[in-house]
Image (tube, rainbow, N blue to C red; front, top):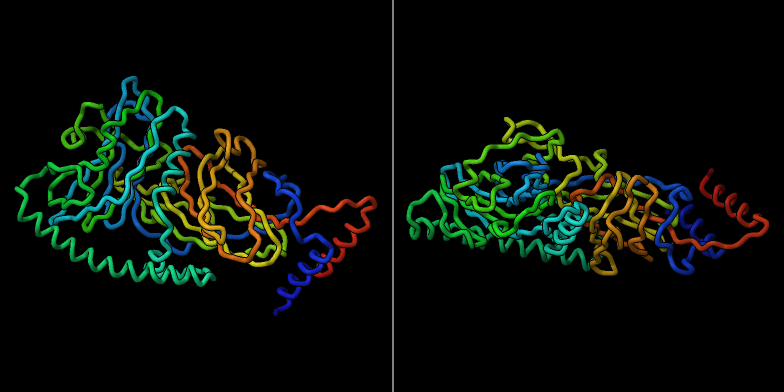
Length: 442
């Protein structure tokens, strides 16, 4: 035990003996942040993988047109976020085109959207929740990318090893299956530049061929002033060119979309292709519940930086995803110390409404912010919300995607649960303060 560890142990022991190191009563749902001094923890980005096509510029669309386009390969995502400013209803269409010389095998993994609404926070909140509920945390996939997962649980370590082995086996089988599907397609289909079957989740896109995807959007009409947002995840063995358009309801995606003009990017510049659709982070140093309150920020464009990309429709203009919208994040928070602590959410950038998921010894839990009401943090940095209370040293795995319409950055507060004792003369409190300062060398 080194000197710092000894001080922390001694401090925790004294607080426990004095009755100040355990939790009494119900943990408050909110806290006054001015009553605490938080030790800042930093977010370290370990790995960024996969590609995002972001379609949010122009956000407000007055006429039919292409609102985003770019080249995607491998594991990819298209994220769209648009408001209809036209009097008549419109729809969103997405078209893939193989501009190369080699057949591309495309596999649709998931497609989700939030119901169009004039309530922007409602749309962002709904999609945020659907995004988490439609996927599971796969640490084995991150380990397969060369990421060292800093978790201490032997059960989790075994699960990661198992996931990694299963992934390697399925990858071999998938490679063989793709080769067979491409050969089968070449022998069975007539030559055509337009795919006639648009219902499957797996298909071969031949050189020069186009095919609409996420065809469920054909039936979703966006009324005037409604926001519509959605996500489609897919993988492709070769580069494909994806186009997103806001269109008239009767226009076909296959034939109508290519004829539409490309809308210019707006001043916010939230569009383009970005590397880093999935990101893995570690919060450092680990939090010691016996050393006082701490906090860490996410999506602040400092240590948790906004990713950069290019907009192919604007002559490969350099762009930045200010907010990391459409990006899936995993944060690992390692904790130590035997004092129970509460985890609070604290928005710093303005109104926020979204969902988080945390994997811990309690299992996998989803947390809605706020629990009630449209948002938290409007015109204040003092709003807080209790997420959960933890009572042991462990590794918390937090998953998050910035919800549309919400403001950033946001902060998480870690507050040890030390009971309050009444003092009429203040001598005990002063004694404890002096003792703590001596132990910490202040």
